[in-house]
Image (cartoon, rainbow, N blue to C red; front, side, top):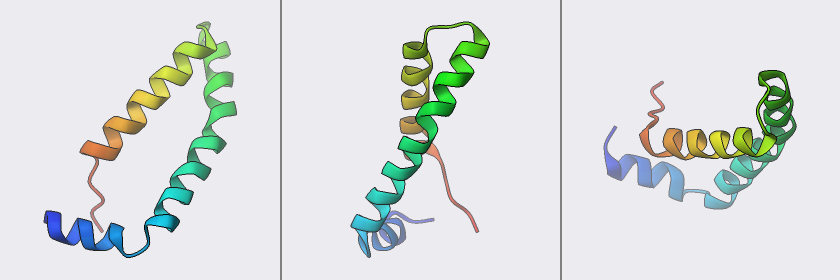
Length: 65
């Protein structure tokens, strides 16, 4: 996918895209904390790791139909 098509798809409705990302983020917080307890690590570690993975996927992930 070319950068211009990505920009066109995202720029068509940035409010919708940002709200979708916020909803997904807030929905994952309890799950991340629960998995941290199960894994035996501090919940802050789980939250930090999920943030890093989310940013990595946002920049490196490719959505191919």
